[in-house]
Amino acid sequence: QVQLVESGGGLVQAGGSLRLSCEASGRTFSTYTIGWFRQAPGKEREFVALVSKSGYTTAYADSVKGRFTISRDNAENTAYLRMNSLKPEDTAVYYCAAGPIQATNERPYDYWGQGTQVTVSS
Image 1: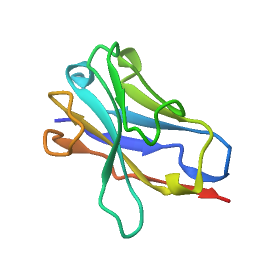
Image 2 (image 1 turned 90 degrees about the horizontal axis):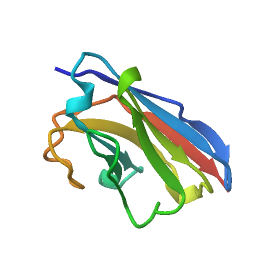
Image 3 (image 1 turned 90 degrees about the vertical axis):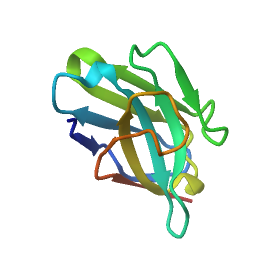
């Protein structure tokens, strides 16, 4: 069992930056792939980025590639999403999730956080 808690969201102007954190409970954090997903109002939840169990492999949605960076610190049981050059279309609730495999769809992810709101003003 893993519990995930996101933090770091907020209101930022277009072009600004934020760093989201995903802190996990338990001693099995390093056995999970961590994914970040987001859901904008009126839209379905979508994949943003993932990082492998070791942290060596990452993947990104095309819409954030080159602007967002995902990372993890297994010693601290925490994953991060650094978001630069933010755009109004990045406005959404951001969720982190833990699962056994690297996947860009939600289904393999067994554990989810409660989400953190990111709002980008124009």
